Length: 245
Image 1: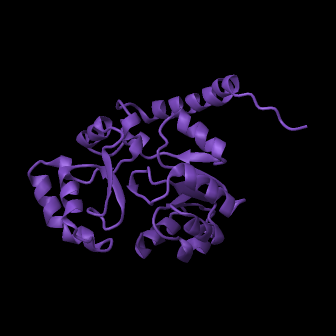
Image 2: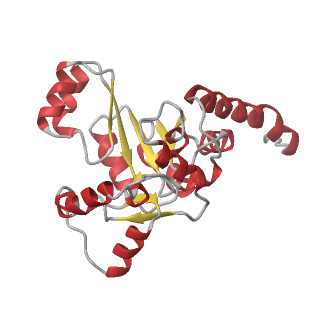
Image 3: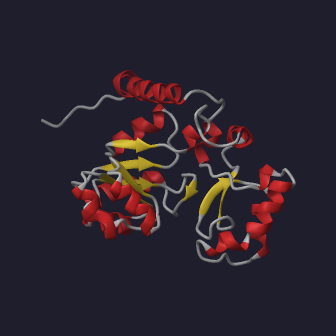
């Protein structure tokens, strides 16, 4: 975010601020003074330590399965390492979580909760075109790809011929900001030609689990109910654990 945007966040005393790229260190004292809860998304242990050290209220450990800007480490490997590195700062798991099974697994890893993106991209309330929601629903487990095409940073998207052409060209993306300027005429032409399938369509590998557009409340309810069923009934019926005397 720009300095001007952060000034608005601080002026309005926003209740929760989530930092997705970089560190909120320059504004941390003013945010804390407002009582703002600060969440920081990270993709590795190094950055988890960095944001916990400046006073983040919670660290969101995001695995590479996630849609949008993402790193290189898978959720199951990343979350416990981040938990160990930043304790007692709470850790929220993200990346590849779209149902009650993922929620239950994240809690078993030691996360205090989950951050879900792709699961809610297909909610009725999601602010994206229906055609892009449908592309998420149509995607299978191998239909996303990480590319620097759209922003200059590694971003997981629903794959398309434009991404394939860029990645096979061997061209190096420009830094974030400049890459957007580089492709702006291309994006304009794509829009004008009605080829929405070639536009940025950020989504994670959990896309293959999603089958229909429905209200966000239903998605959340089913996720919580599914986790409760696993933790309260299914898992205890399958696994017997006897604590040491």
